[in-house]
Amino acid sequence: MKKKYLLLVSGLVSLTLVTGCTSSNKRSNAESTKTSKVKKRAKYLKKKKVNKKKASKKKQATLKEKKQPVKSTQTNTQQQDDSQNQQQVQQTTQQPQQKTQSQINMERGYDPNGAPLLPGQDHAAGSDVYGNPDPWVQGQINWAIRNGYMNPDGTDTEKGKQLEQQLESDDYDIDDEDYEGDY
Image 1 (cartoon, one colour):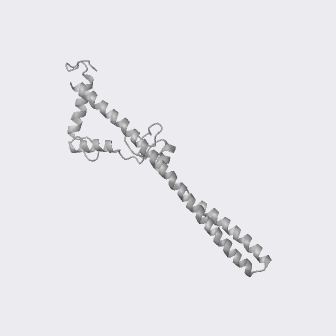
Image 2: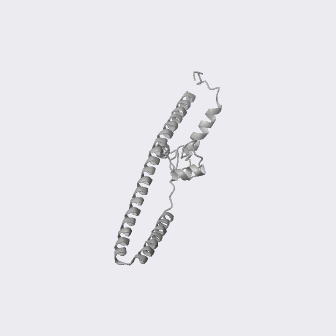
Image 3: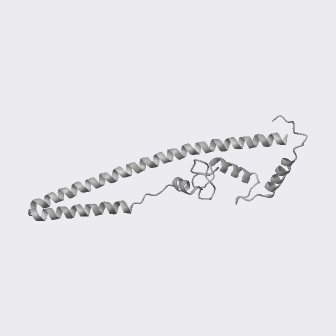
């Protein structure tokens, strides 16, 4: 009877883990799509700002050309072009692109806690990209703490240790009279 219960519980746990991983993948895809939209928008706004600056500088240059003789106008225009190029270079070097935690995890091959990533994913099993427990795992931890099997710091209580010992001894008693062989 105990064996049936343990197999049923382990099956449900496995099914829940698989389901949690796929929903986490959908969330990750949505985050990456949102991130790319934000980057495109920032690039567009930056380009628009640069174009406005160019237009105002051209306007200023035109006004100066009308006031100054022809030779000095050519020199001023060239100097303005040079200063615009320098400003553009400074703007691009001042704003390095920051990587998301997902990208960092994929490059390293493990999450911030050092757990290996799931194949093709940006997080480890049972956690998010930042290494925090996913909601299902956190629920299991909260249940164990609430029912006295685990301390808040993650260590087992006496009750939890006794349960672990009982489960280990049950695993080796395969010739149990409760075993009916209908698996």
